[in-house]
Amino acid sequence: MHEMSLSQSMVEIIQEQAAVNGFQHVTVVRLEIGALSCVEPAALSFCFDSVTRGTVAEGATLDIIKVPGRAWCWVCSRVVDIEGHGDPCPDCSGYQMQTRTGNEMKIKELEVA
Image 1: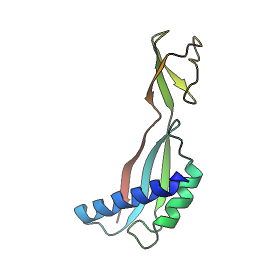
Image 2: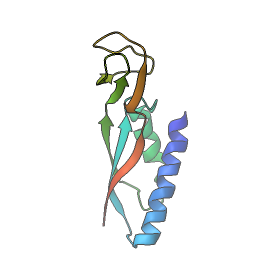
Image 3: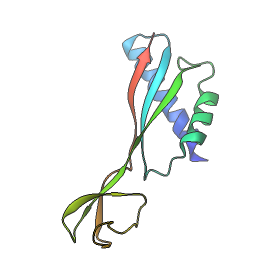
């Protein structure tokens, strides 16, 4: 389950930001997760709750913002929504696609006290 290591990395980033910016507690973590990122939001939430114990993020709400998968179709020259890697273009059924969004996972915002 790579969600555990992702959660631990998030806590490290949050702890570093707490040290740099001088806040004591995080109340909300807003996280963008792309539809193509292979991250399971429910598993990530579970792991996040576990790894935040005893940290500045203990008890913080994890607010997950889902980013849709989008790709450029070389056949019909359009940006289209896709649900998975290797999916054909929904407009022309071509497979020559270049992913634009949906692979990312990033901390978008922290609400702190």
